[in-house]
Length: 190
Image 1 (cartoon, helix red, strand yellow):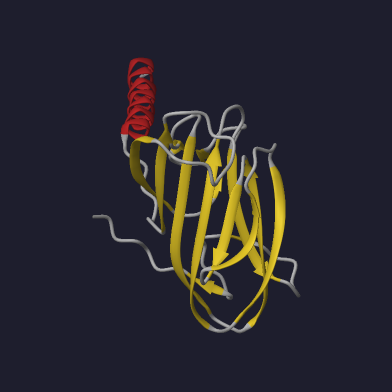
Image 2 (cartoon, rainbow, N blue to C red; image 1 turned 120 degrees about the horizontal axis):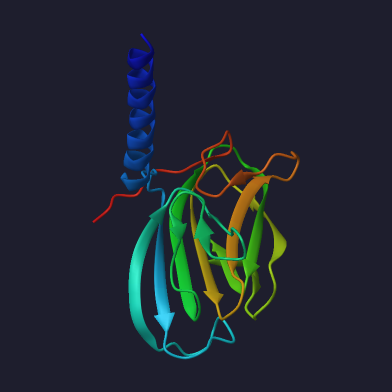
């Protein structure tokens, strides 16, 4: 009887360890809502609008603009994204506004950024800076709009976050996350 109990305990432990190993080896799956264009610059970046000398680039898909974890440009599920320094990042996304109203975008960045909606400048801080959040307000009609965000990381700590909400409400949502206010269609990977 004692031997059967030890075999059962050993079998359960093996199943748990095997499950944990399989989980760590299994690729993370997220809904690809936002396409990020990442470009590594050959020289240090001191301003968002400086001349670029791109030596490497790639695209990455994320579900939301929550890319600031532990002082690094990092996604909660995907881990580190991009290059650790001298990085330009661009996001272009069409999204639907479900009801006309006054909205806010809360852009957190370390280093600089520029945000445009429907090709209209909304807010920017194009220089190096420590992680700061800037609130940018805009009135949006119901319908489709284009979000265009440019960001750069020079050196040192990094991070990028964008949340949105209605001006007359306290709730905020990650950009890329559907709500009663905005709707985002998933991207198709090519």
